[in-house]
Image (cartoon, rainbow, N blue to C red; front, side, top):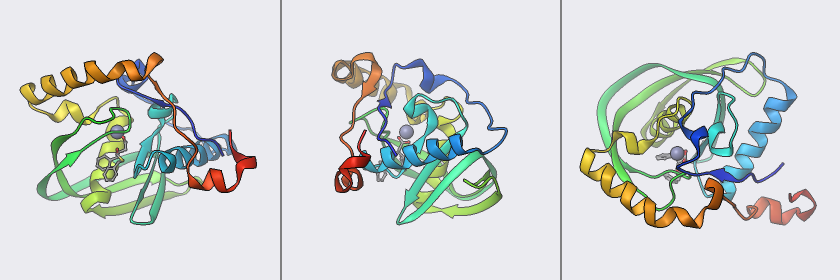
Length: 185
Ligand code: K2U
Ligand code: ZN
C-alpha cells in the first residue's frame, strides 16, 4: 500500500467527471487500499479518486471506525431536515465553510468485491458520503458557499497555494506505514 500525493485546488482533475468502473478488479482494490492509506495519513475521514489524480469513480470513507469503499456510488434516496455544518477538504487545506446538506441519505454502490451494497447513512457519515460523491462529479464544497464567502475563501487560497507547487500536496506516511517501514513508498 502507498501514501499517494493529494491534488489540490487548481489541478483540473478535481473538476472533471469520473469514469464508472466497469468491473472491480485487483487494480481497483489496489487503488482502494492506497486511498485508505492516503486518507489516514492525511487524518481524513473520506477521500475520492480525483484527489489522488485518478479518474475512476471510486471513494473511501471511515467515520467512527466504520470503513467503506464505494465504487460507482450514487445517492438513491435523501431525506430528513437539511443540516448545516462546517466542511473542509483535503484538496483545499486550511479553508473551511458552512455547507447545508440532507441529513440522511441512502447510497448504492459496488463494494471492493464488486457486490452491490446499499448504505443508509445519517449525520457525519451522510455528509462525508455526499462530499465524496460530489468529488466524483467535479464538485467541491466551496461551490455551495455564498458569493462573498467563496470569494473570501478563494482569496485566502491565493495566499496559500504557493505551498503546493504543481498542485501537489505531499503527505508523510501515516502511523501504520511507519510501523511497517518496509511497506513505505
Ligand atoms: O474529501 C475530502 O477532502 C475529505 C473530507 C471529507 C469530509 C469533509 C467534510 C465533512 C465530512 C467529511 C475531509 O477533509 S476529511 C477531514 C475531516 C475530519 C473530521 C471531520 C470532518 C472532516
Ligand atoms: Zn474534499
